[in-house]
Every structure is written in C-alpha cells, then in structure tokens.
Image (cartoon, rainbow, N blue to C red; front, top):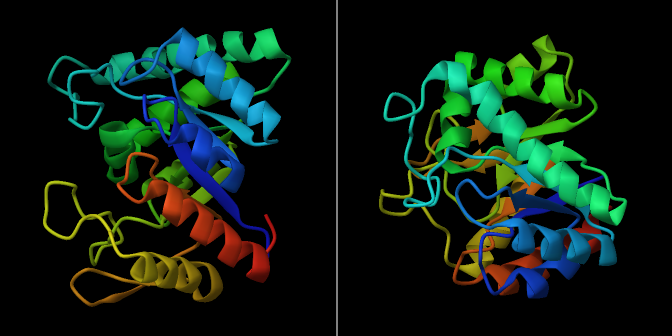
Length: 244
C-alpha cells in the first residue's frame, strides 16, 4: 500500500526543518494566513532537498486568526473564492519557478478547508480555481467529504486525507479545535489511530462511533506540541508496514 504523509509548512513554526525528513508532501502557506515570500522560498528549497512533493496551502485572508475563522459572509463573499485561491497559487508557483520546481497538489487551510468539507458550493469554487490554474494539480481534502464529490465533477484527482493528531466526530468531521479533546496529545493514541485508518479504513469518533474512512494521505500538523516526535514515530511505523 502506498501512503503519503503530509504536513502544513511555511507557517512560521520552528519545527519545519526537523519534520521535513519524515514526510512525503508539504502544504506550503501562501501568505494569506501565515508566511511570506521568504518563508515560501525556504520551504520550497527544503522540500526539494528532501524530495518532498510541493503543495499549496491557500486560505481565507486572515492572518489575525491564522485562517481559522470562517470569513464567508464576514468580509469574504462567494464570488471572491476563485480569485483568492488562484492568487495564492500564482504566488507559490512563481517561487517554484525560481527553483525549477512544480506544484503537485492543493490543500485548503483551516476554516476554508472545514467549510469546503461540508459546503458543496465552496468546494466547487475551489475546484474551479484549480481547474483554471492547472487541472493536473491534485486536491487534498477530508476523507468522505463533499470535496471529493466536487473534485470528481470537475475532473480533478482527489486525495482522501485523514488526520493523525485530531479526533473525529460521528459524522466524519474533525472535532473543532475549540472543543475539548480535539487534539491528540498521546503518542500511542496517535499511532494507533493512524495504523487503524491506514490498515482497516476505520476511525473511532470521540463519541465512540466507528467510522469508515479512506486513508490516502495522512496529515500531521507542524504546530502541535509533539509534532517532531509524532512525525518520526509515524514515519518509522509506516515505513515498516507500507510504502511512501
């Protein structure tokens, strides 16, 4: 089984350089919620050095809240979403061009990701932006969400994403960060969840329900307290049991 391990990067975390040897895909912030041209350059260079696939991590224009507040109807309207995503892809692609690198995928960030996972109209607009920019780019999105349906409708390759360090709700959504138990802090719990998602296609919700899931890429957040430890642990376990 081929498994991809991805991490959000270029967001100002000091752990990026320590994590990147253990991942196969990097989602690079495009400046709207974090980062700037310099962080993008450094992260692209690191990704190339470690043979890591380069992805764009576009978000709402929300540096004040790190892209974790849903801006739709609060300064952003539906008609702007295509332009917001395309603009961010253009910025990162220009930096990739400096290094002779190519973009591999797009993974929306934070509140934009969560909105797209449940809102077909927002998902469709993100897919439209990708098609306009480069239809060969893959879309990373929440496993089992409407993002996959819209990607298929728009002729895009969809990669079902699961999370190593987040808990799930009974409907397959992620537990909101503002709720108790949203983050997995225990290494054994994290690894057990990853192994079960990858090997069995199952995850247990925070409320106890067993959920069917498709794990094609596993996300580990670089801003977690145990990010480096978890990255090394997951990499070593999956390297023994699967193929990156």
